Image 1: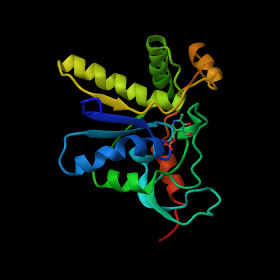
Image 2: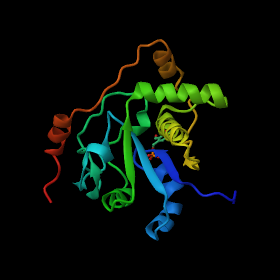
Image 3: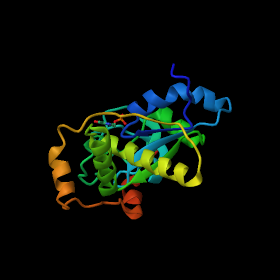
Image 4: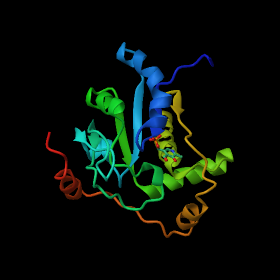
Length: 200
Ligand SMILES: Cc1ncc(COP(=O)(O)O)c(C=O)c1O
């Protein structure tokens, strides 16, 4: 509709709905050979696509759901209480998980302080305060844009602005007063949570 086509698409990824919404319409072209990179952006403290495994698991802690074949950190995985609450989910959508396994979906993970820094820059330049979840995609967009600039390339970058941050002022306050901490989820903890996967 705007006479342009993305080179790369980013969205924050909790369970995968906003990523699926913005990126799946381009996936058919990618499967047919179009050069478009599609990237899930997740927190380093809940690294489902970057450190989880592809396996059958429950979608909930209470084990009420049917088993889903997806990337998971284990249904009893308890992520640290970072400020992007909407990204603290142990699994990912089965459709996106299959695409990741097939090599059609990339994923990156960031720590929350660098993510809030990107959100602050966005708010100061665009006049819109992004949700902490959205700041993850913004961080990835800024990194991509800086890389393109340094390489002298022009790129069309599409991202999903998944929500505003008007209810996240306390988190911004912690960040701006230097009290926010990073939590990278350690590999051994990931392995521990995966021990409780259902045996299928
Ligand atoms: C603002 C915002 N963005 C992104 C997400 C991530 O969810 P999903 O990956 O399902 O789109 C959430 C979840 O609550 C959210 O509140």
